[in-house]
Image (cartoon, rainbow, N blue to C red; front, top):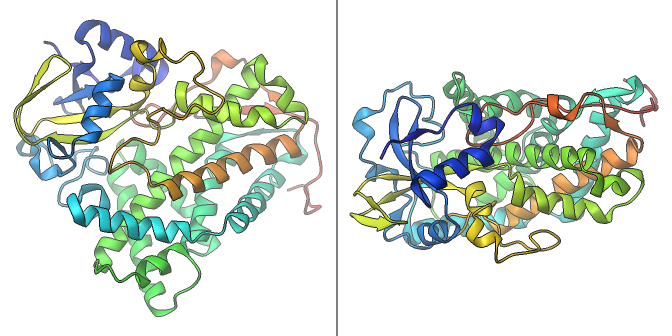
Amino acid sequence: MSPIPLRGPLSHEEPAELYRQMRRKHGPVAPVLLDGDIPAWLVLGYRELHQVTSDPGLFSRDSELWNQWDNIPEDWPLAPVIGRKQPSILYTVGERHRTRSAMLSNALDGVDPSELRAHAEQFADELIDSFCAAGSGDLIGQYAKLLPARVLARIYGWNDTKATALVASLTDMIDAGDRALAGEQHLYTAAQQLVAEKRVEPGDDVASRILADRSGFSDEEIVQDIMILLSAGHQPTADWIGNSLHLMLTDARFAASLFGGRSSVTEAMNEVLWEDTPTQNMPGRYATRDTHLGGVRINTGDLLLLGLQAANSDPHIRADHTALTGGNNAHFSFSHGEHRCPFPAQEVAEVIARTGIEVVLDRLPDIDLAVPAESLKRRQSPWLRGLTALPVRFAPTPALGGTGA
């Protein structure tokens, strides 16, 4: 059974074709190679992914179980993605995980939805002000890539000047390339400083609410959790905005929304979660004993990657779901089980993404692609799917602040 490299041209240019090839060759669970030819399994099947994420006793989140640690170099670029001995919520299990998850969910649940939307509108307007007078811009580099980090930095407790510096570090870390470790270190330092500041002077923010909780987690654990909350909240939300705007600009079904309509924004956002989800694949689960899954033998300590987009496009499920958009939320885009994205975090991401899209449609009503759709490129990452740029043109319009710049 020959494994397929997970990183390659198909993984970012035509991931749907890659998953089809894997499914034809191997079935619902395929052997893959990570950076450095490290073996793992990619769970492609919807039912199999549901099984893996629903059975933490057999498929644990405890990365100490991995049977490949002896083969992993210290400078492995995937270290920020597949970590070891990291005291974050990603790697806790059992009752301790449930307590920790409740702590973070409560802190996020304290975000006022109307204030969140107001923050998102403020920053969205400021970003559009920076290029609206030019009559053209890049909705990724000048907008979607920046908006979530600025909003999240505000609600987590950072001052506004920190947000822009965090974006590059977040991108480097999540793309798991050559600068991944440097990006992780910068984010770690920023989170350390935030926790230290909020210990001395708490405020009405997520970090302060976490620190005020009496669940008994250390400052180091809280630092790690804030890193996870920011990294997991920023780039997927940025890609949700970018992928949704891309769909609306290239698919005739959504043309009405570009000229004053709003009903299709929800449809576009939901369709992206099914067809072009920002988080394509994610680690991971580790087999606690020898078992079988999807017709293959899984050995104790094997790593299973969650193929979220592959499962969403599983033909066995798609045949049973004729209407996958318009309110059908049975996708895996937020994962599933104990380690799924907390519901308050999903709500925060949705408010930021929806507001970001609606502000674009309000401010730039005659927007159109500035380049042929087929020329648009995706980031070279098998983990998160997003555009490198989304050039657009529109009638020049003055900035709300009146400066035009």
